[in-house]
Image (cartoon, rainbow over all chains, first blue to last red; front, top):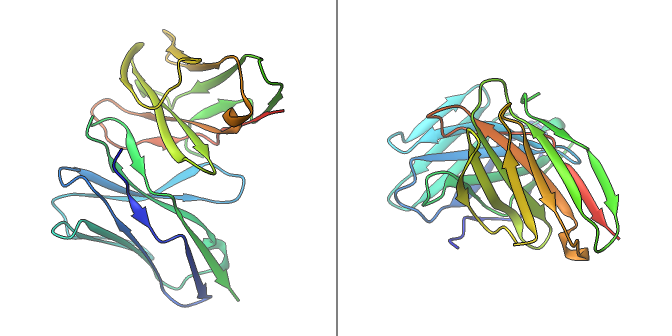
Length: 111
Length: 112
């Protein structure tokens, strides 16, 4: 299958901004998503962006979409220790139903 | 709380056995999706049901099967279990015409 690529690890200091990057494969993807998984927990939908948008802001979260480069990023402003988790980028698959996930970026926020 | 309920939270069983994982979607959601999360494969789509009918199939083994009942809850049946089936199994649901999937907390399966 096609791969959604993410860097595996990111470490930031509390109060700094975090930027998690993702490259996706399907140029026809209509929606792109960011999910968060805390240790031992399920997948929490953080935000999503429709492919006709370049940017979406939701409180501390900013999503940027560059369709030409098939690049998606998630910026977390004023990162807190509670933001430590694994962040997954996902796209809708060719079938239009399933989600194709990246391997996840593990974010560590240090005091 | 996503509104998607999965039971049990943990399941420990032996190789060769059969287990059933249960999922109740969010109220009103007609679509149910099953995903497997393992360390080596990451998150993989298994199968989707829509209003009782199978709609899409992913990397689901022949030893695995699923169904969606008239009350819209779904069950994932895993048989002839192998050590490699140990994983976290997620259920997600979405509303009619929606591309937004909400996930349950998962069932952690350990095959010993």
